[in-house]
Image 1: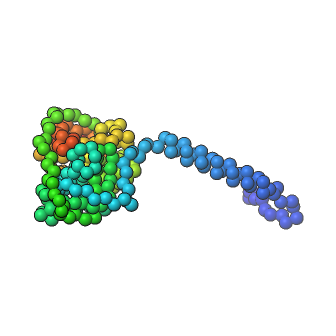
Image 2 (image 1 turned 90 degrees about the horizontal axis):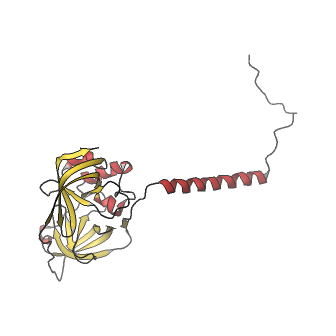
Image 3 (image 1 turned 180 degrees about the vertical axis):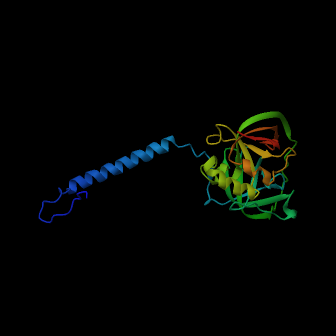
Length: 245
């Protein structure tokens, strides 16, 4: 049988570790952990410049349009005429009374902003006591395009989550898409650092149904046509022209 070591009570024990040695080892572990964290942070992808200040309540006035996604067209936020998408506080869309659409309205809630893009987590929608109807004007046809990039759920990418793109965000993006929230498209290399994205719509200029969900947060190539409406660019794409890379 193999000889196994055993304890002998009268023999001298192992050398004792001093308090100074323990303190030095602890300090080394702390310094090493800090250096490791800094290194991982340096090589991690940037979360993007989106902001959602949930502690700052705002009121914005304009005209509410139900299509292609519920939005308020306003001039209150700078950048001139600007659409602000209206969503719930979670991964769900909201509905407003038909009497409040296509007319002056005041919307309260918290803003989610990334560059010129804006969205509001809505708390209330009210008739504007001094309405001045804001109109989008004619759309501009900017021609055909073939683009590679990622289909994003706009709420997270605008600033509700950081980062709001990539494989780690796929499950969340699918839930937002299933809840009817706006979808966007960012070209390769602009998902993290870019401040501009294209609103993603089907070839008729309408919101996609659930058939687009399997492509969300994946690298894809799309072939479509770009339009500009109220200062916001959108790309209209048939489902068969969305190809996973």
